[in-house]
Length: 402
Image 1 (tube, helix red, strand yellow):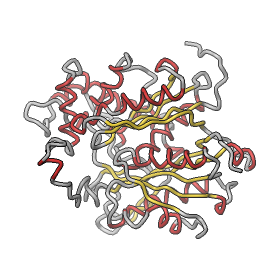
Image 2: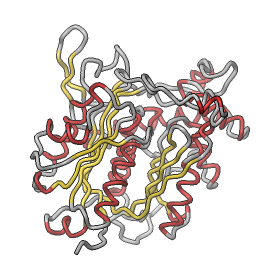
Image 3: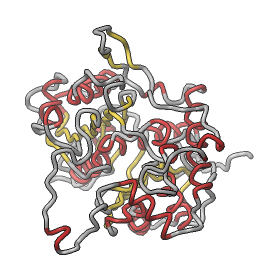
Image 4: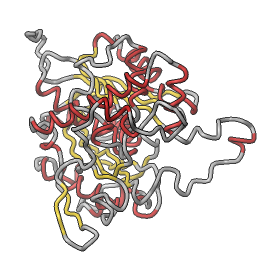
């Protein structure tokens, strides 16, 4: 008989994130090769895990076509050298793809059906722009189910500014600038690099190189520089390139385990899953999605927002994170939030980002035994939010000295 089980985040790795497009480092690299590289890196780092014990592989992509199609979880598993006995499948929940890979696998582990699983995501936005070949049903517009620009994420961000005028452009600019500064400080301190898997890349001139760090960072960002940027989504708008995540290529993968398997194999989990939730909101203001999903996840966990000691919130747009912080009464520059920067600095390869949040939270947990609970949360295109609450296995109950 299968038994209900704890679910543990054992480990996670990712490729460095690259700028999308012809000038980006992955322009000549296939999307499936990015996730395969990450998967090989994950298995090499966890050599004590027998590959044939992996019960399933879930890999997400938002645009499932070309080198991001063909049931990615299965094809990537074969290409990464996992035994053919290991099955796999693909997932799509737009920006929350990898997060949904994790929660879907977690459900199977929690029910006792799986012992070990690999979950992640990939997005090559250079090869596959968001909604590139999509054919939205005409009823969406004829029946006014959604606004015509609900699929334009920048416009949805402008709408949050409209709805909450106190979330000013200046506040968003400051948040965007601090994301860049925090990301560079984390790089300078060697916080990010341990979980990056280097990728061999081929430049336009045929020369080979090695991608070892996130490509799109702009640590020199200033408030003055941000004030002068164009507002591409609306004349005299408030959303700029400096307060948006750039178009990005990259892949993430994680190893999940049930309690019995973790014990049997002598694994040292980095986090324990406490609860998760997804919620829907109006597609036109999709950025507020993490508010109801976080409230739902907190309710399921029997916790309040005050119990959360570390936050990893996906910075699709600065105003989207600010709307969540504002809702819960958290300061814009609260040190618990995105302490190593976020997607505005390192990029947001849509379906890959959820596991990046988890990788960073896990690394922060190891440094902070005084923190018991952490939150990973993100907004999702077409009006959704996703939130996962994690417990720190290093928690010692001691208050941190100021």
